[in-house]
Image 1 (cartoon, one colour):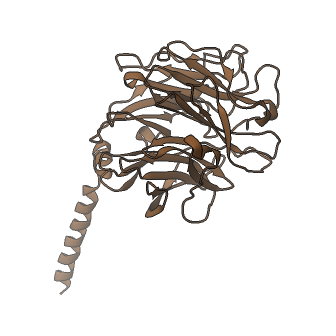
Image 2: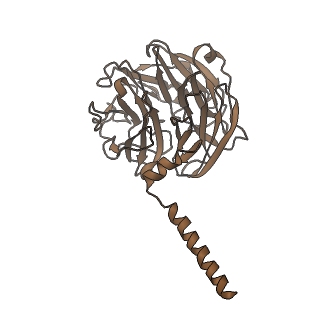
Image 3: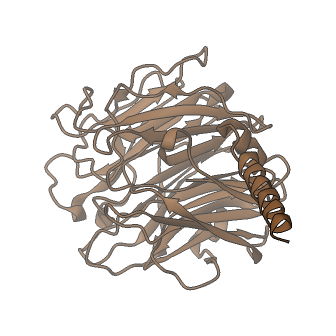
Length: 396
């Protein structure tokens, strides 16, 4: 009996070894295999953080992410094709010119005419391109026409100095590119005087105009909260930011333009009376049902449709469960019009956490497709996209 028992144990050990060996596969293979689930959480390549994605008309996903020293690191670009295969990485910035500290200051990505790729971010203290007064620059990098490398980044701040919370970028199929950030402008020192500023290019990001104010002067802008931007067909441009008319009035606003960014109208999405900067980020996505915006308020994340007439009084949609330090929302949509909302939980200043997500029907009804994953690194946030089969991938 002892001999039989030893034989059985040896066989069990061999089976355990084989099972363990099966899951040790190359990273690229694991990436493609993982995408077969309805919603799959995937870590960013190279141990990176702060992923941002843009999905092209051809279904290819364009990814940018951060690696290195959080105070002065690097941005990388990869393309994920419809099969899930990932291209080799391409450097976006000059070494050390990007910043991840605070989570709100990282890169944003946009696709323009003929699939042109644009990345915008707040420059680090090591960025050589500076604002004219030597302060933090708003940097924009354009991928070259051969799609083999990024051209050197350039600063677009000309007079609206005081960038702190990070900027954003948007582009459309007509060759327009918008770089936006919030700052005080000449002579302004406090948050109540800050505004959202926009510099526009009409030649596929080759040159940019002098920036002009896009947000109402009376709203102010929360100094270290991030932004989001999106351009759609029909001359529409959307931007999100947090106001700061007073120290305890930090509300979420969406700016909407119907004339390619010449003028903007501001709509308050939700109030938050808090006497400090919550260091929020935002998300915008164009779905078959319209444009949806996501934001955070008092530990909870939510989203709402913000285009057309609904922008005046949007119906706010929240995920199931109690809000528990839910931050940094991301949105994705599939061909059926379903919307995935993903977010971080338990994260803070120099504190790691986890991620979570839930899928909603095209009409905004929450489904049972929800989940979470641990292991979100310090300063991380999430991005998401839909696969050709209608499933979703959440990157963190």
